[in-house]
Every structure is written in C-alpha cells, then in structure tokens.
Image 1 (cartoon, each protein chain N blue to C red):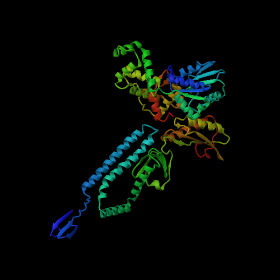
Image 2 (tube, rainbow over the protein chains, first blue to last red):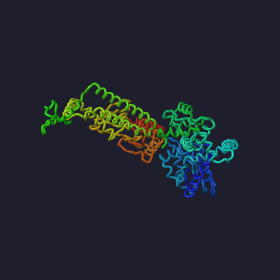
Image 3 (cartoon, rainbow over the protein chains, first blue to last red):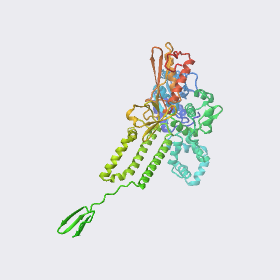
Image 4 (cartoon, one colour):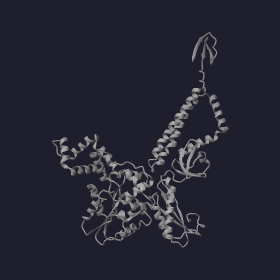
Length: 295
Length: 294
C-alpha cells in the first residue's frame, strides 16, 4: 500500500538503536505506519545496499544479493494461507540465517502475528522491531503537521481570527480544536486514536471526515457471516488482494460476502482489487478481534 | 409488665403472682405473636418470587446479549448468569421465610416436621437438584458456554438453572440434565472456560504411502484453516501412529471458538483428504480403516 507516513522521531530513534545491535531485523507495522520510511532510513547507512520490494504474491522466494546490506520490503507476500503456502517463507528464513549480509525486512503486523504463531518466523531474526500505534501526543503532532501542510494561509487566517495578535503555534491550534469540539483536545484525540486503532492514515482520514465533512467517517462494526470476516482477515494481512486470489485463498465463491463487506464500507473493490479503506481500519481490527481472528 | 395491685385477686391471663407485704405483684408475659398463613402472606410471597424471576430473567437476557458480542469473553460473561440467578432467588427466599425466624420453638418444630414430611414424600430430588445447582454455580465444574459431556450427552452448556443444566447438543437438541447428576455422573469439560477448544482430526494412510508428505499436508491444512487458533500455549501438533493395517495421522489444534469445533474438524478433514487424493497419496482400504479413509 502507499505509505508516505514518517514515523515519530522517537520511533525512528529506537529503530536506529535496533539496527546498531542486529544484523537481521524484521520491521513489523500496520499498513500506512511508516515501514517504507524506516527502510529508507536503514538504506541511508554506510555500505552497499540493495533493495528488494515484493509488492505482491511471489512465485519464488527472493534470493538475497551478495552485498553488505539488503532491504526487503513487504515480506508478508512470502506466504499464502494455504497448503504449501509457507514454503517460500521457510526457504527465505533458511537463507536469512546463513547469509553474511545485514538484512532489514518489513512485514504487515497482522500477517506477522499469524506467521509467528504458526511458523515461529521471529526466530530467524536477531531483532524484531514493532512500530507502535500512535499515541495521543503523536496523533496531535501528526494532525497539526497535516493542517499546516494543506493550506497554511487559510489555517493562519482561521487562527488569526481567533487570536489576531498571536503567532501560529500548536497551543493556538489546540484552542481551535477546543472550540470545535467543546471538550478537551486530549479527550477528543483519545477517542480519535482509539477509533483509528492508532493508525496514522486512519487518524488523518477520520479527522478530515469529522472536521471537513461533518461525518463520523467510520463504517461501524460489519454485520457479516464468519466466512466474510475471514475474507477481511485475508485482505488486511495481505494489504489488498485481487478478487480471484481472494476467492482462491477462501476456497469458494466470495461474491456475496464481498458485496456485503463493500456495502458496509469495510472493503473497497476497484479494478478487481480488494482493499481496506483507511477509515475502516479501526473497525476492521475490532471486528476481527471479536471473531478471534487476530492473535 | 409489672402491675402493682393492692388487695385484689390476680386477673386471668396473668403470668405470675407474688404477695409482698400485702401487695400483690402480677407479672404479665407477652402473648407470642401468632404466625398466620393468610392470603396476604401468600400473595406477598408469590409477588416476591415473581419479582425475583423477572429480575433474574432480565439479568440473564442482558448478560447473554452482551456475551454474544465477543468470543473471547463470552464464557466469562455468561458465567455470571447462574450466580446472579442464585443470588436473586436466595434473597427472595430470605424475604419470604424471614417471618419464620420469629416463630416460637414449637411453631418452628411444627414447620420443620412439615418440611421433613414434604421432602420425604417426594421432593427430595428437587432438593438435591437445587443443592447440585449451588455446587455447580460456586464450584464451577462447568459454566454456560462450555462444551461438556455429562453421561451420554455432549453439547454446549447454554444455561445452569436452579434445578437443571441445559445442554445444546450437536443435533440441535436441548437436553435438560438434572443438577444432582453432577454428584452421580462423571463430567468431562472440553474447554474449562476457555474460548478455544482442542480438536483432534485423524486421517489414515496406507502402509507404503508418503507419510512425511501426509504429515506436512495435515500440518499445513490445520495452520491455514480459517477456524484455527495458535499460540505458545495452543500449539499445532501432528502425531504419526503405526497400526498393523494403516498409519494414523493425528492432528492436534485449537478451534478459535468452541462453537466452531465441528466446522474446524470438518474443514481440516475435508481439505486434507482432498489434498492427499490430489497428490495420489494412498489411503487404506475403507474396510479396515476406522473412519476418514472413505
């Protein structure tokens, strides 16, 4: 998925420390949580670096180039939840423990949790770096960065109207939010972060829905059969799938379930690809957790 | 009450009389309050029990609905239903029989005798069931939501009542098991309050078949099932047993919800057999394999 998010400074700092002490690292994060930015960071280190991006289901496990550092993005595409679907992953892990290169890999958090339970994938890495979900303060910083970046002059005018003789600062923006929501900023952001399950893209999307469009933005808990919930898991763990691949993994016809999920706003089907919209991320996770599909 | 009466005879109904220096002292003992079983008392008791029934029922409905919102905490939430029900009924009984504690010794003896006679005459089973219900609620050998085998019945405990436990069997039959059975029958609890439940699917291979490949297939099928639950405490295991006539592959894995026990088992068995057949891995003659070979 498109991931332009840059994680908070403290997360980047912790990641740098992690790289210092390990040769093989698995970066585990939810979609849109800054995996690419962390991989870029690893690529900026000294030494010859090669980058491999899986991008989608793979026919063969990637060969690790003979170089100082290898960055492999989206390793959750190394497995299919099916018979023989773990072979590429197991071959990759065998290569990993025998290579001399420093290898930094990125993984979808949902897929990682499943794989770690069923294949003990974490044992192949020196370190597992889990990108934490956003907290309230981080969400606040993210939102104000967003506000500033979108239309600074308009925002400035809005703030100026409220506080004409003051400069634009976080404090004045906080006051603006306080006016808007008649509650404390912290309480509002707590609710926002909870609704978004701490996902940066979801936080931003829900914020935009609530401030600009005046709607809640969340699709709500989908009322679907277990078979449809499992489709949701597949889409979440793979960060999007083609309809045919989804049907193949489900082992049955999926049109009815897919239509129901799309109608309830928890998946988007476009150009034969099924994805989870950013605003639905929190509700999807909560739904799958209730069905015991998230471990 | 002490009444001083000078030179008069004691009135009737006087408890005791003494004469001191020409003065008669009479001591009146109070009449014991009569305990009359009038229509008002019966109506009050009926109203109390009706109210208790409504409260217990409402609490059960609220908790049952709340429990269905989450698989993980369903059994925990449901386990409060019988506890609340018993507590409500205990309070109701205390309210109704409260006046009994004000009885005189002779009245209490008469009541005890009557109660003994009633028990002896045929409701001892009901009494045993109620006691059994108390034990089930507080010792918790099983709770609503658990999968249990009581006697010949296997199913999900849907309710623990005052006198009986309700099981929903695989055939969708509701079976009422008297609570006293807890004292007389062995009770097997498959999940003991956990949301997940172990399932042991078995498939059979012919001697000479590729056993290692069969084992891989069963393992992959189990871990890729949509119903599986795996954690450090709930690992996947495949065991191979060599019998004289066939080889048994016995999986052990957990369904993520006790209610998906049979869906999980069917999913694993069907997909394993289909893959074995696709790959031409030989299975034993159905006549000699116990099941799963057909």
